[in-house]
Amino acid sequence: MSMTPSPTLVLVGAVALAVASPRPAAAGGAKTLLASFFNVDETKIKSASGYRVTGVAAYTHIAIGSYQDTGGREQRIVALAKCDDHRCTGQRVWLGAFESHLHGIVDLAGKPGPLRGTEVRASRDDWTTSLPLPAKRTKFPALVIEIRDEEPGEGTTRFGGTYSGTERHHHLLVVSLRKADEKVPTVARLSTEDTYPAGGGTSTSYRLEKGKQRALDIVGSEQRHLQKDSRCRRPEPVEVRYVLKDGRYEHFDAMLGRSGCH
Image (cartoon, rainbow, N blue to C red; front, side):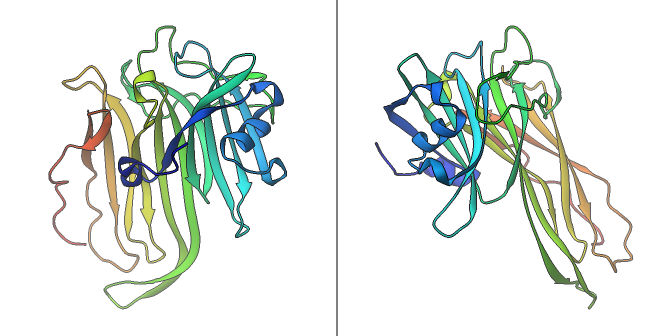
C-alpha cells in the first residue's frame, strides 16, 4: 500500500490515500472500520459515526470520527468504504486536528442551490443511519464537510491599534463519491471565513450554479471585512467562481474586483 500523498491533494489541503488491501467487513462498526483504514489502535479512536450509503456505485459505508495521535492531538478522519460480507476497501481522508462537521451530500450535477447538503446525524459506532442522496438519480454525489480552525490571538492594525480576539479559518471540503474520483476524492477546498483579531479578513458563502459544463459551477459571494479602527466604508461583496477542470474545481476569476479604501 502506497503511503505517498498525491500532490493534488496537498494543494486542496486534505490527504486521501487508496486502501488497496482488504479490510474487515463493516460488521464491527464505524470505530473498527476507522481503526482498520487508518492503521490505528481501536482504543485510540475518540469518536466514530457511521452512515450507510445507497445509490452510490463507489461506496456503501462512510465513517467519520477522530483519533488521538502520538502528540496527543485529536485528528479528524473520514473512511469511504465499499463493503461486502467479508471485507471493505476504499479511501481515507484526513481532515486535520480541527473541529469538523458533516453537512451531508450534494449533487454537483443536479439542481442549482446552496452548497450545504442536508444535515444528518448518525448514531455512534454503528450503521443505523442512512445518508440520503439529494435525488433518486444523483449524478455527481459529494460530501460537504465543514472544517473550523480557531485559536485566540492578538492583532495590530495598520492604524496602530492592537486587539485581542479569535483568529478563524473555516473551510468547506467537498469530497466526491463518484467512482471516477476514487483515487483522489477531494475535489474542492473552499474558504468560508478567514478573519483575524484586529477585524480584517474575509467571509464567503457558496452556491451551485449552472455553467458551461455538465457539472455545476461553485460561485462564492466574498465579503471583505475591515480592521476595527478603519474609517472606510464597508466594501460590497464580490463574486468568485470555481469551475470543474480535470476532476477538480479551479478558481476561474483572474481578479476579484477589490479596490478602494481598506
